[in-house]
Length: 302
Image (cartoon, rainbow, N blue to C red):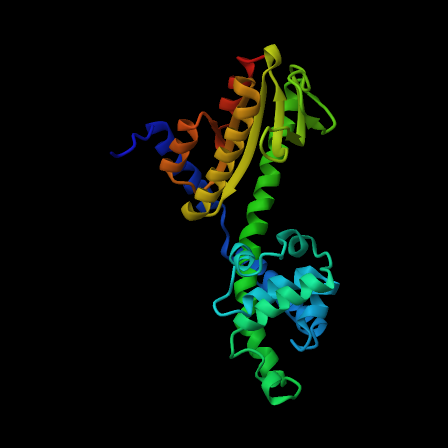
């Protein structure tokens, strides 16, 4: 049976998409792309040098787990963090994300898996027992840098817009006379008083680690609104963002019941059907292009 989608969700999704497209600029987009390409080439070069041009991948990972991001792109096929975790159970995403060192044992384990899956067209100098040529290194940079740069550019733009979203909410709340509190773990109902808010804080849950929330607002009768600010670049990307919000909303509901009301502030390209999924899971939906609606909603709850 086809799900019924609210006309409001359809209209707002369409408007958000139009605004996202209108905000794009060919000249600045090209500048951003070339900047991210240069960054990608730099991290690839650093990983090659740290591993003595793939002769000692384990040593490179002992120095900096972040090099694994580059090595994953040398695999056939290029492998995501989650897929690499399936191949190498002892490997930790956090080591790559934080650039922290791996123990010799863990580094050796990750290096072994990498070498098993490495694209045979990369590192032919290893078989020949020689140094790589400039042409071979250049070929790797031309081939791999766009893969990494594309991911980084999408994430960077999304985070940039998300930070703007959060700042707009903070400024709106302050202009309405709300008081900003220092961020701290919210583990009791009265932790955020009425007309007080926290930016980037965490809510306790029963079955998972505390879940971070972008904005927490104290409402009347000890209720708290947990708002997630999400910017999406395309409808495929939006599915992951929506799933993230729903996962948090369910964890908070299980722990707090109705005393936490989850909200989402959306911007960018998102399918109306995914907006409807949020609503069907009890998430209150707002849009960056209509902050007046959020302001009016707040006024009814304080």
